Image 1 (tube, rainbow, N blue to C red):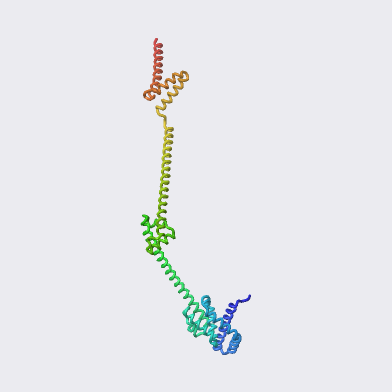
Image 2 (tube, rainbow, N blue to C red):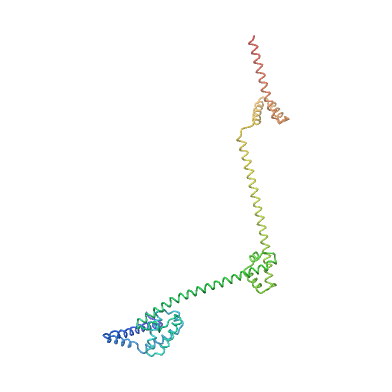
Length: 347
């Protein structure tokens, strides 16, 4: 898979950094162990051979371009920064003026951004140890920086929230005061006035209020619009109240009719359930008697019915007297038969 020029340059810088660290470490090992002196010299010689003049110039050019770019400092990780600084320092000691410029710029940037002095970090170390110390210092500085950034963002967010709340509170106060000022002209409460306004009308009302404008066309339009809206609302509420009153009246009437119907039903049930009165029994007995008479003498039965209806005491005494008369005649006839029988027996 082919590489882009940027990827190839980055790989060259990383490779160069590894070579520099290896070469520096080899030099330290020479001082520590004479027995391996020849071997380490051979490693240094091999490293020097790999760093041809053309390649050094390419690395120095790429390094100079990167560290002078803001994009590099915005996106480069700590390891890449440490690699570039290591390469720049090495090439600067070899007399490369462009690499020396890159090193000085990186030292200033690291001091300004991370608060680190590259000369102080691992100043008594060489090679890989100094590289690791620089990388660890950058990691620590990044962690502290993230905490500072987070705290700063929290502070800024809190300040923005306070400003927003203050602006909203001021806007609400101006809105209510403007509504109070205008609503008085149409005998409406500020709340009613605001409810009847559109967002655009509210905004224009606040602008007029803040600029002390009392005679604008927009103001008159607002007054007319709200007055009409409140009148329509009042009419609608009156219609609603009337409809509700009619509904409640119908319900009350239906409930009353239901109650009356239930009372009638209960009375009927009670009437059917209680024993028949004496008058009712007399009516029944009289009707049965007249029905019997009508079988043999319909005219006499009908005459008695007519006399009963025309009786001055409502017919009750007539019925009773008729019944009593019949009973008395029966008793008299019985007594006469008894007297005749007793006379016959005495003879």
